[in-house]
Amino acid sequence: MLFFDLDGTLLDSNGVWLDIDVEFLGRQGISPVPADYTDYVAHHSAPDAARYTKERFGLPHSPQEILDAWMELAREAYAHTLPLKPGAKEFLLRCHQAGERMAVLTSCMPPLCQAALERHGLLPLLERVITTKELGLEKRSPDLYRRAAAEMGVACGDSLLFEDAPDYCAAARQAGWSVAGVKDALFEGREAELQELCHYWVETFQTLPPELEKRIFQGET
View 1 (cartoon, one colour):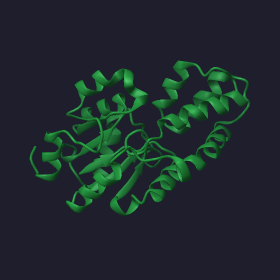
View 2 (cartoon, helix red, strand yellow):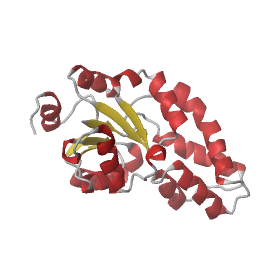
View 3 (cartoon, rainbow, N blue to C red):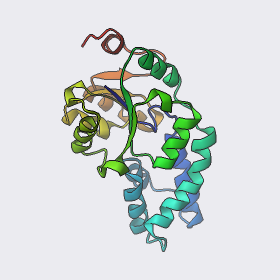
View 4 (cartoon, rainbow, N blue to C red):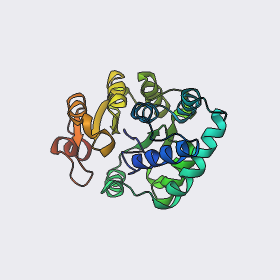
């Protein structure tokens, strides 16, 4: 079964969170955005990132108020402007036509995820949308991937994840999944690491590596 991350994998959206960080923290009089802060929030779920933001900067807002502010800034982008990665929809259509089972596995806030998938017409191609919020586990945890596979009734060894974040790829691999690393500008400095730890490397969905093409469409492993 194929599992897809959303932000930075199917959806060209990782940059929007950098813009949201700049806008939100700027409203609090914090500029520029610290690089280590950006790294932290990029690798944690939204609720954890909101708690960290409050504690890191001593903000008077509650974590929920921070989440609500982020949601307001992000909703317009996810519902109306963020594009898919080149070739992503066409690839999912091919997989669907080939009878592949597919699901999204994401830490994206559910309303934003839903808005983007609806806008791009991907929901009919997916068997399920699984969120870290729903399962109560982080994407850094191998247990998330074990649980997601169990939820879909598949073995970890029969699960293939498309993901752009190296740490999440590593966690999925620890859980026994196969992993296809997807190129994204946010992790440009870690591409060598990503290629080393993943079974497959996807520069673009428009041209898959031959061994991955064979695995999915010809049933070869």
